[in-house]
Image (cartoon, rainbow over all chains, first blue to last red):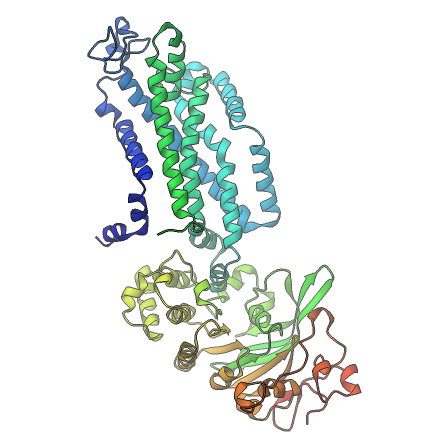
Length: 305
Length: 320
């Protein structure tokens, strides 16, 4: 239990516990993670099960409104699905896509950043110009472009089946330069330090020096960026879903729920779009606030008491 | 004593925009198995570059222009990158000035030691760990088991330099190049580290090239000295002989500049002027502009290293 004691005595935990915003957002995020990934256990209904859905239940308002049904705490959507359950399942889809996309970004970004930074010369120039070119397109433009092609060539029915991995790949590919550039910049700073020279003097091969020695010393900024990038990826997914290139309504994410509900907002059924919207905002906010705290904590230029 | 390392006419240049700069000029020396040699000189004399060229790791834009470096019958200058990597750490180790910088801050001591060995010798983790423990004991650090799990920041400077030495010894190299190994440490620790190096060279039979500007340290540790000036060796020979009876005016100046050699009331002795920039080394003897004994010959002709009556080799027209 040495590690447990280490955690309890760490400066990081102390700094965390003395920042109410960080603690608050962590609690929110943890709550979202638990109910999101535990959706099949927590949710009162299964929105994927079309047999249990009754169209007669459609557009029921939340329980505190007139004409509500007590079976549906947060009301129902246009197809009669329970909003609470749909939001929980949607939250899960959004979280999976967000984290998956960042995992891919981190993998690509770290690999390219390490090779570019350590390799130097033409390798560096090649990869960084590539990143520059890609950053000069907007993420959405790339995603819409690829999305439209894939959707057209596979057909809508097939697209629905691969929607989750597809969105992970598209958002991951579109955003890797952020992490790639950060890693490269840190590698440039680290590679001239003496411990790298010492590792070379010992006779370690370049790949080992990169992965074992330089990489762990460059992970701090990657950690901060990754947190923010999860929020960005979830937003990108929501935006893509909103314009109809994301998750299909049969397996909705938060974004596609907002989109689906948007059509009904003027007919008075505001909850179908507003409720998942609130959840999305809270989720993004808690991730970003936690990321802010992490950045401040890891920034050596700020005084840490 | 059989020869461990022989360097012949080594010339190292740096390719700059203004043209090639000669950092090490026609340097030759040999080192026997288990022998200890001191490379002495002021900053920029080419000591460190000589040290790095022995493991073919001169930083860009430097390169070995000509000459040969033979280590145990291997011609270092002609090895491929892969073959050179086998030599580094396994046959020749290097210790640097600042132990705060040479250990990776995010890896434990144990990881760094074991990794060094396993990069060269195919052995299991357990075996490597046993050797690591043994080496930590060799450098006189108490409770080695605990140290393996510690990070560099948990140790003091002297302790870290001991660890660095232990890492250098991991693959049982034949030669250790120590580049100013005690400059970053305080005086009492310096002496301890030097004693340790001396002891280990004796017990392990390792050759040592000690690169330093500290003549006092060199005279205690090494058997032979090579004094470098502006990329050339100006005097080389038995340590005691050179320290007590220096022949070259530069060596004489260096020794006279030591605080213990000056009168208590007077200012410290110094050699007038500064070492010439390597971009424009003056013709003839590179030291002539600072030399009290300078004659016309010194301005025209580069003096060669010749054996003098004392047995030392001196590159000076005037020394007998």
